[in-house]
Length: 121
Image 1 (tube, rainbow, N blue to C red):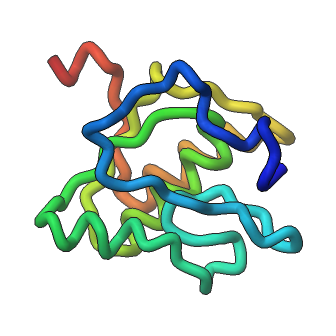
Image 2: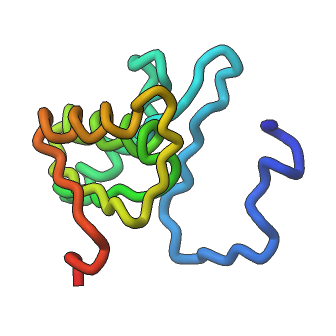
């Protein structure tokens, strides 16, 4: 919960090289799965502009959950004009009522590539 110790970064986390801390999910009435938009699809997080300002064109996505946060972030990245690669073995899905298969179908339709981490070496 925002403003509590549980919402803080872990005390042992040291990332002095980090340039951006993305804040999302702070509207109580709106879920937040995508790294690009709140679930209202109107409230941006600022990530797209940040990436464009640095000339970045391809986004590699990994994390939890494959069929929710990873999916929404990958789809929004594609809609924003970025190339998208999902590192599937660095993700885990929840698979509610076929949501993993639905995610794979959506990625295929949008041209979002799924790879294994070994393919990136």
